[in-house]
Length: 127
Image (cartoon, rainbow, N blue to C red; front, side, top):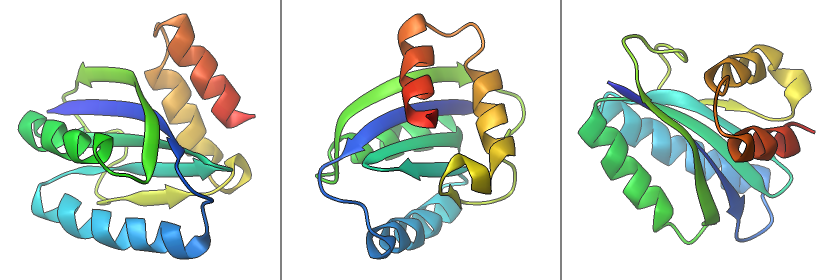
């Protein structure tokens, strides 16, 4: 099983309708492919952690890279894991940090020892 953490910029303004559509579609696909994770959105940026079988994660990430809603997709962390950090949910959605501080803490833990670029991108996202 692998865990992939990436950040991207939205190609258009993010609205609740857009987020709802993303979550409905992602939950359906994630359940089918045994993927769990969390999606955070802040202003025009997305940060997402995906966990699951390596092939399923790689296929999902390839779809995300080619999704016209995203650009400047940057991998912050990709690693093998033995357990899921974001547990039994196909996709948890979190708005600003105040709504789910524990998720931000989990991501900070994942990024311990990550590159300075990855840490800087997350810090900018978390402001």
